[in-house]
Length: 351
Image (tube, rainbow, N blue to C red; front, side, top):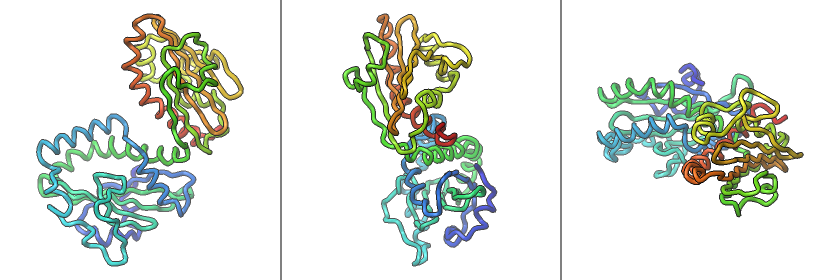
């Protein structure tokens, strides 16, 4: 959520003393429910582990780096310590410096200083000298939240034109997506280790036995473990993963590419159009089929672990052609589906 600039300027952050000449562009709040006064370092760790952003953001950043390479914006000669002096050179003696050469897991930014409730990072290129200020502050509804301020010093007319051009993309697409990714990373911090197995011979026998398929041509298995995962039933997990009705993206893959015959509308007997064909105390099986393949999805939730297992039978030769390239995308999406479900259940309560 974007905040008024006065929220940043009105607090006695140390960055005010060393960032003279910089313009405050934005202030954003990253919600961290359940966080306390001592959790600043834990939130920063979750930030570093947040992983890649959504596809639109990655595409915009890829275009930016290509343009930078084309026009020489990001050459070493335009960086901190070359074109502009580092803010580290302005630090008073009582501000601890982070070791030079570290990116604190937030490359291409490099750290300037770090305290128990705030830190600053910087980068420079031919267009701007920019500072990311991260601070730990009380939230309006109780607890604490992370606040991110973006400060810039444009490099002449080129820098001002560049900032004017990117501001709409930054405020409407990039930073909102970045904030959501950080909030999700915080909610998923206790989700535990993600385990995976691909291949019909590597699926746990106890899970494989839950499939209705007499012959299995493809199988993969992803499991998430963590103390925060106990309490939700397997069906609740399945609905948190896929929803009651399929999304536009799911319809495109399941119906458009795989030709799966999915039920329409919401029903207690279906999850996202897949039929519930069997269930037990800690598991549920969903099934769907097209004219060239049959699929089972098995969701199991027990002992603080949740797993998603995909099992397919190729009913026609086309299945062996269509699914292998799609399976690579599926294996990238499955961990996100599990972690996204964990975040939704954490927010909504596992009941």
